[in-house]
Image (cartoon, rainbow, N blue to C red):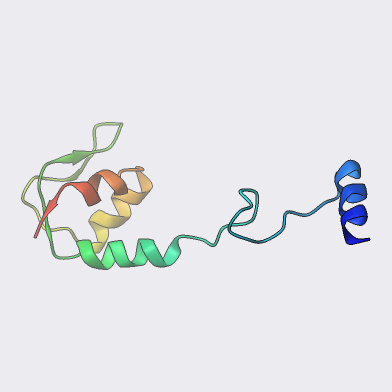
Length: 89
């Protein structure tokens, strides 16, 4: 009975994606905690190279400390991943 109901809803387009590991359409939890851990890991480290935004603005110079301001600039310029790949302890 449930299977027939699901098929009927799917044909109407009203079926909701089921939660679960094997359903690629299921809503995924946000990656906010992962980003918070990355931010905490990067704070206080040194940039291994100069990171610039697409418009040429320097986000952080090579050897400079990574601060909260640098992290915010990198996030706004979509350079957070690049920054997280180019730091030294």
